Length: 254
Image 1: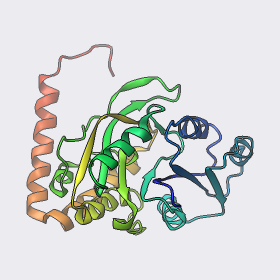
Image 2 (image 1 turned 180 degrees about the vertical axis):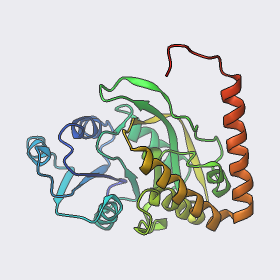
Image 3 (image 1 turned 120 degrees about the vertical axis):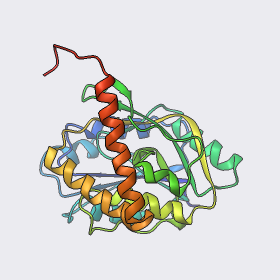
């Protein structure tokens, strides 16, 4: 019998961040899952730590890959669960009952295409920084993602049979397009009105952030049209400038 969930974790040299992820999965009260760890041939202590934490519900696959989305595609190909959830090293399920909340929403709504929740941002010490700047809407549609990635990838659980592989043409935003493809094929999306994922605040470089935004803009143009996307981004800039002008100055901030 296949599990209800396939939780897929991709990592490489993640000895400093893998523990909270794995521990949050192992702590789940709902045991209807498999945990697939796709490791990119780590050379630090990642594999040793995983070996020291065996679980009959976890499989570890380690080999070189061509990047994070190639690794995610490997995990997706290995998945047997009805639903897939990607949980990167450093990110975590928010509480021991998180999978049970998802399972209840699935059973109560006759296997919807997508179930999703809210996200908290945490630091390396697992301290809560605050909610994610984009909040998941009560009603989720394809049009919702025209405003950006309104549901964090780690809080986005998709029926496996409606998913496809990640487009590795995109180096930084393939997860955004993947969610759009899932939404295109989902007949019904169900909100779990709780925080379900803890997202580790990243130290991404400014250059990569900019490249990610450029990729996301191009994806938006394809799915939503160039002119509407341009106008929407003008609105984004205007709101950001208005918010900045309305914010009190802090002399302690550089």
